[in-house]
Image (cartoon, rainbow, N blue to C red):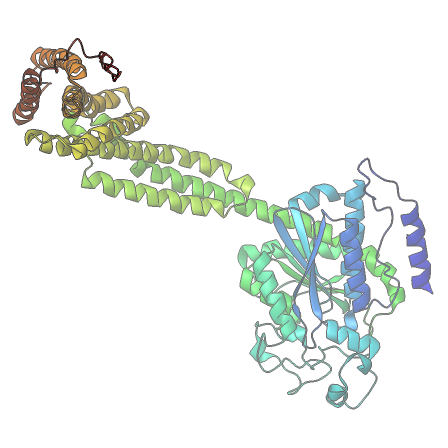
Length: 602
């Protein structure tokens, strides 16, 4: 009846929800009814409703399955880079801790959307800095068995479950998972020293080995994936806080301060290590493994071998309503402090690394005084590779920082990347320039042999592309002096070569064209081309005589071209005379001879 009244109230509230300008329905009520026996199915339904109500704030996923195949759900609340972790219902009869988890999600989400404060905490600010991850029900099989009995399990296992319950069909005292393993005695923290039953039981059996229960495996895998700053593990009986597990020094001081605050907020007593010995619990494992704060909070007065009465929930909630917000606040402080320190450490490491990166400058700039300095030495290549590897290493390290902590180390790394990029530009200039000189050398081989054909012309044509590529690389090189020296070494001789051979290419192409025209009997056209050729010959001679050190005459090639020219001149001299035609003959028409008509027959 209580649940029905709660749902009706929620339905009325939803009916009158206002719409935003975009048509989005804003939540005006709460979704979780904490005043009930809160079941696994209730939890799943509420998780889905909360996700629908707050799609940008709440996410959920299954992180694994229980021993009997039920999904174990993790729910996130918030969008911040810092993570904290809260869980409930490691123990079956302690399902009220699931209610606490779910009520936190519900109430905090509502306050976030409404921009309200809870207990003085700015919920929206906290949840933008920190994401709270919940596993509201670690032990869904155990909770289902404790609340609903054997009907939710295969008949084939009923007798085994009854045996684990010492022959009783009343499961109100059930604490373990449905295979009789106490999940909060499964974690590898002094596991081998835990005392209790030697076989599966409704409570306190630690299992055959640590981390063998599926539920614990799912929790461990998930926690390792989110790497939370602080964890809270909720249990239900005793109104005490377990906070210390082998801490010492600064960790002890830090965690004790947190524990005292949690105690003050809840009114619960702190359990000190000298008065309590245990192991195998989630908080024990988390504290030992991560060296981060972990607390186990028992929420209600001792209820005996059963669940805490639902009537206790209002008082429990009053004591714990802001615990998740406090943990979020302190988790972000730890996160922020650690990442600021990591950012500063990386910044210092980068600045130290800059000393070697700075040495690149001499290879691509200050040492370059003449054309002979345009070279890539082994020392330069080795230093470049070292700097490149150092940059990648630092970028990888910086990339592991949250985005807001990367600014200073990235700024410190920028000069090193500049040295690297300028060095690479210099090496590319030299490589492209050397290729250009190589192309000239390849072209000179047939020219010196007096060979001019399609292959030679192809080499000449590719020279233009090589010059353009070299100029592009040179223009990107650092330093005016370096660029000028590179142009002098690479571009100028290449353009001279291009200009010098250009005349020979023109002569060769004209001569081969004239040969074809003579073959076709087009002598007049050939004579006109020959006059143009004489002009090109003069331009070539004038160019070569203007600066013999720059413009070269290829003797064999010149001889070849002159012989081709001489052959054409001879052909023109010996061209056949045009045929003489009879003026009385009319070309293109039939000649008709007039004869006297024959005498008529007598």
